[in-house]
Image 1 (cartoon, one colour):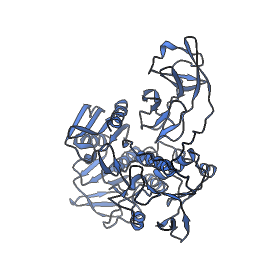
Image 2 (cartoon, rainbow, N blue to C red; image 1 turned 135 degrees about the horizontal axis):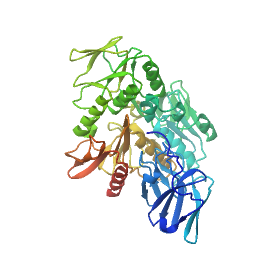
Image 3 (cartoon, one colour; image 1 turned 30 degrees about the vertical axis):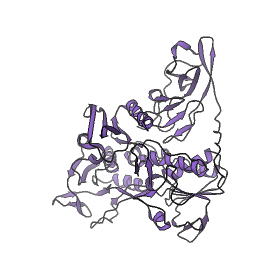
Image 4 (tube, one colour; image 1 turned 90 degrees about the vertical axis):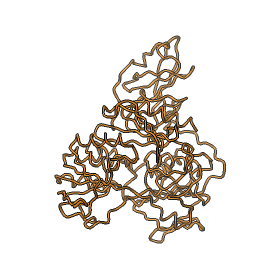
Length: 508
């Protein structure tokens, strides 16, 4: 899926096109100086922006135009057509923009414009003296990046207990693990970004306590750091097995870059692997290991893979897809012991394996919040603006349970894009804005060459409607409750996925 649509197709826009070729609301793909450019007309205004999404190079010409924005069909990033600014994750980098003029009945695309910093929006209250971010994942990084994009000038201290720079975590179980993405795709930003932008990123830093009364963060070595505003973005950690043998070096979980590298290193010599759990992570690992030529057995207690999230029809399809690629399933079964070169199952079967990867779920890291006395509800309870029960302390990402306007319920979602978008919203609100988080949850999963996009949130449903043919990899699946669509999953119907997202936004 990762890549770039960089072919210079369509007309040379420096030579211009007839204005009749671009009706109001229309779009046209062309090029200027060898770069693909997307022209969009909204009324009398015509915009020219880079045609490839700055996230993974998705084709914006196939995206959705909403007012003066364009949304990427692959992973639902959103850009301002006027400025190129990345308005919604997973994209963080802006699009290039070109000047446009009308000469008679022709549209001419001129020079590429210099990138401009977006004007900071005025906050509703005083600017914080210092901001501390606890967590170096999607939400923490997105918050730090957005604070500087908004031209916040105060200190930003970011504590991450990881040893590596913030990385594009979805890639750790997808392209990078499969060996189809280079390592330099992984960092969300290179090391120099943090120093250049005055972000004090402290890796390998373990926070022991939030001293709410003193407005201090206390590290495990006793160091104290005062904060004016704080973002709690500690994320989640893998659920670890407690069966005999689960602490051996050939038994892996996958959360960090170090975890992914460890699995890759062992996959170079292992002939057979057992994946415990038929979750998204577990099956993405299975696909990546099959791409590397490792024989894979998946053991899970479920009747079908991912049925709890995607329903029985999609579950059957996903199993068949993996079986086509040689994965062997042992469903309605669990591991009871892991030996040096085998895994014993509850059913009595023993599977020979040189490596084991466990993907049996994650749990939010709530210890700091609980000890600090923040209000909890199977997560850190936040208001619509992501502020916790303690003023000045915000939470975002896997730990946050927020009032979702789409389901009218308090929900907690473990999606990468949700964490990024919440981090950005929390950043604005730490600067004194009161902007409710109202984004429709979105995630994508990749299995071999089959992407699955999912918008909305359905913890339960009473009806599933299928349009198209799941087996033919051309479908839209609606998850409904009480006649209302709560979520939509699609395979190779990217435009319809974007339209479903927009419909849910407008339904609130």
